[in-house]
Image (tube, rainbow over all chains, first blue to last red):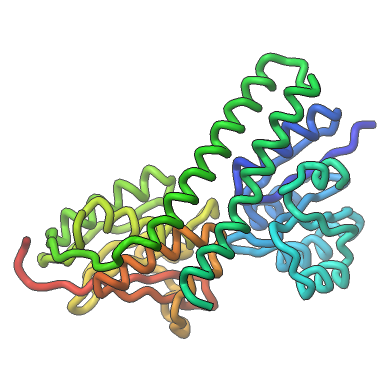
Length: 114
Length: 211
């Protein structure tokens, strides 16, 4: 069965790239441009196996979104994406059950490894 | 940290993502991992967009090195409001009220530039979030712009909450937002948030009589 991934990021250029990269590897992809949109998607029946979640977003940020995901869909694997290394945010994300924390690509290998 | 140091720090951070996107797309194309012509076209368009973004970021960073004195040209509150509303519409932000009072506003050297800066600040709050609405109306002796969750369609209820100064450097597109913030405040404008950041407001001082 093809794994389903959700990409949550307000940066359309980055989501476009991740979509192309991961779709080329055979994953089913859904893109959401805000934490609120993801949570609405989950309520509407979207059931991704893995959620790639940006940390810095307007409206609901990645950590707040992660908290809400933990309540709405406790089994979902969440990988945090960030443009910068922020130790406190990493600790908080791991404490909330994030499976991994990946820096956004200066090096595109990071996204592929995730 | 000085403004110049902040600009450099933000530039380094913000350039990383589009640079990585361009690099990633080109690598996919060169490794022949995108079999369909549509995917290859999307990759080239994405590379072009990413490079355009890097170019814009460098221009914005350069803007900080220019003389910040904004000039003294004036425009009518109505003209400025309509221009801001048009820019917001281009960016997909709904304008719930466009009710500018009579009066004139200092727009520096260019009304379009001032309108762009105001719309940039309001767009920070709107992002891509549905249900956010902008309003343009009188606010005492100022022309007031607000952006936040729509209440009954006639108000932005979160504005009733505690006011806090707006920090442009905490925004996702910090460089462009900080540049817009600097222009607006140099023109005498004030920017603040309320309702735990749910709403953003901006007031431009106004003189009676049209420009």
